[in-house]
Image 1 (cartoon, one colour):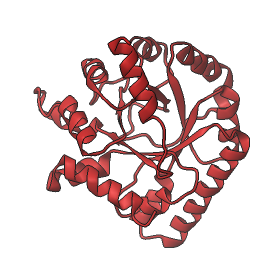
Image 2 (cartoon, rainbow, N blue to C red; image 1 turned 90 degrees about the vertical axis):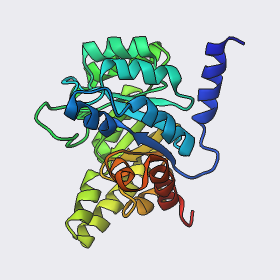
Image 3 (cartoon, rainbow, N blue to C red; image 1 turned 45 degrees about the horizontal axis):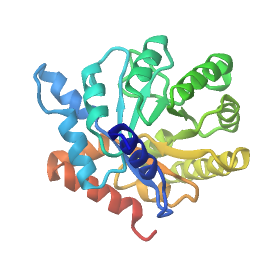
Image 4 (cartoon, one colour; image 1 turned 120 degrees about the vertical axis):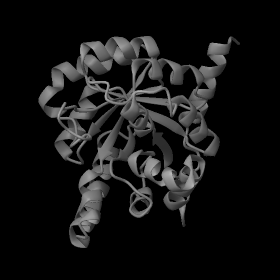
Length: 265
């Protein structure tokens, strides 16, 4: 078996969730944010990715934004070459990003909405409003051997559209749930949690082979309730985990997040 075939087989194995607990995908974008703030060569996103893997991360997420505000093209290629788990490459559905994804061939591509002025992704992708384009885009990525996830709000119409597009997975946007917690609004937080649970159930009914991920704004304080939802395959967490790493180190931050996710499960 060639080295490429061995790596592909290993990736396929690590994509399986046999523990019936949500996997943890660590987003390392903000390691690159810190580097770009000074325009120097450190800290290294690659070194961060490898440390996260050693600490138990099940995959690494990076977002190559059109404005290249943090992750750079060279990071994508370098990280893809050395990961032993799976790369989840977040991109906007543009022609430029399609060509990059075809060259890199990450295990996953997650299509996300993108606005230049936003600090972070503000909501889910409007799949229902872009069906022809996204259906074709998903098909082209899959033809290159890449699995495709769509980052969407927990809404029935977006779930149905994602299934119709032929996506392999969806990632439910948990931002409203997280923001309610930060605002101290327990009632709204409860409502948003119910909304996410209902979205998971709707997705399972629509396609029982669809993988269901979730992420955005998740912290050690709010992640457990999301991780307990039956049917969640993977949680993608970045900002809060990198913030924890400032105080406890990156490896410890990964282990603490996994502990918060899986406590009692």
